Length: 311
Image 1 (cartoon, helix red, strand yellow):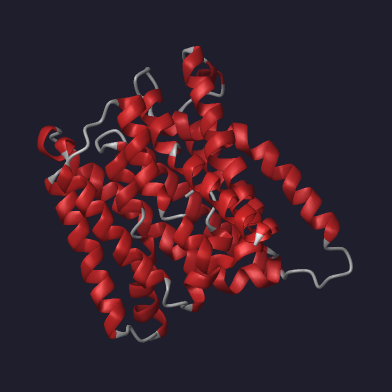
Image 2 (cartoon, one colour; image 1 turned 180 degrees about the vertical axis):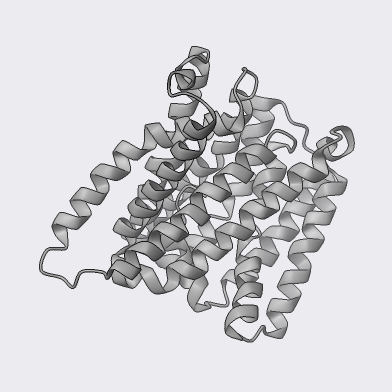
C-alpha cells in the first residue's frame, strides 16, 4: 500500500512538472527569444544530465547482450523524430496557442498511436476504442469553443496544427520505441534519444546563427530555459520512471491524466489565462476518451509511459 502511494505521488508530481513546460515557454516569450533558440537552450542545459545517465546506464549493462548498430541508428532516428521535430513544432506552436490548449492537444497522442498502429500493423480497433476516439476529438472541439485564444489570435489555427504535428511525431516515436526499449533499456533509450535530438537541434541552430548569439538574451531567458530543462524535462522523467516501477504503466497513465488539468490551473495563476465552462467540459471529455484508449492495454501504449519523457 505504501509502495503504491509513493508511486502515485511520484507520477503525480512528474506529471505536474511536465505540464509546467508550456508555462515556462510562454513566460520566456515575453522576452526577445525565438522558438529555436529557446529549444536549443533547453537542450544545452539538459544534455549534461542525460549524458551522465547514459554513462551510468552503460556501465551497469556490462555482461549483457549489447544492442546492434542498427538498434543504435534506430534510436537516433526516433530521438530526432520524437524530441527534435516534436520540440520544434511544439515551441513554435506555443507562440499562437494558449498553454492549456497546447497541453490538451498534446494529450491526444494515445489516440494517434491507436490509429497509426491500425494503419501500419493492421491492429484491430475495437468498438470501445472507436467511441473513445470520437469522445476525444469531440472534447477538443468543445474546448476550442470555450478557448478565448482561438477567437482572438489570427494564427491560432496554424499554432494548433503545429501542436497536432507534435502529438503526431511523438506517437511515431512511441510506436518505434516498442521494439527498441527491451533491447536497449528504458533509461539508456531515453538518454540516447534526447542526446540525438540535442545534437540535431544544435546543428539546426548553428547552421543559422553563431554560438555567441545564443548567449545574448536577457538573464530571465536563461533562468526559464534552465527551468524547462531541469524542472520540466530531467526531474519529471526520473519521477515518472520511478513511479512506473512501483505502480505499472496502466495506473501511471491514469495518474498522469492530471497533466492537462494542472496546466489549466498553472496557466490561470501565472499567465492569467481565462478558464471557461466549455474549456473545463471539453478537457473532461478528452480525459475520458484518452483514458478509455489507454485502458485497452495495446502493446505500444503499455510501453508508452516507459518512453514518455519531455514530451
